[in-house]
Length: 225
Image 1 (cartoon, rainbow, N blue to C red):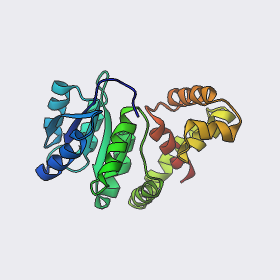
Image 2: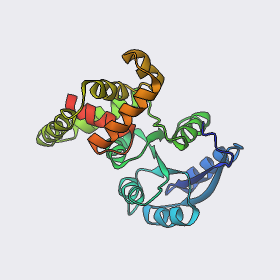
Image 3: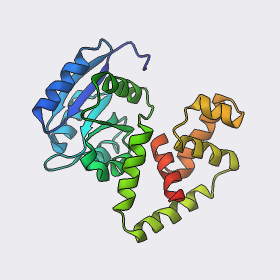
Image 4: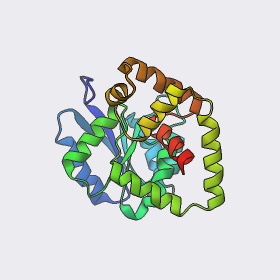
């Protein structure tokens, strides 16, 4: 959990008023979290983020007008952007991978138990991804199945080219990140220090031209497809 003294500022973006109301009740009940605003669509979300400067945005993936993916892409191009946690249902599997590529740090299902949503917000606020391995596997499988073979081949070639520029240790670290291992677990597996894992991760972000650990994992998964 983030160690900041001020509460984590959360903005809720969803076109369903009942969903927004339920999430506000859940999050505002925690001393270290505070909901600073709501928005019902992507355009309103951009304005609300500029106005309220949240730390975390709970972003619905499917909304009338601008969807959560394009909104996330725009928001994350700004200086000092908030962390994005996507809200989804499994009938939008095909869009989650696009959201992660856009820079979202993770996703939670709308019917996730309240305690897990709270934990996910805290995790993302600390800058860490929050992905259920089982859910992630299903999402990637669904997205891959709906992607034309030529596009998958092109993505694989691009990913392999990026990975070819890595050192052996960086590649080992990237593969461990793709498995969902924490820094301490990677350090134990590779017999290196946590500080070295963090250094390798920083190098990976630069060499792969990505913004977070989730996107590192996606490059590895594209290469293995």
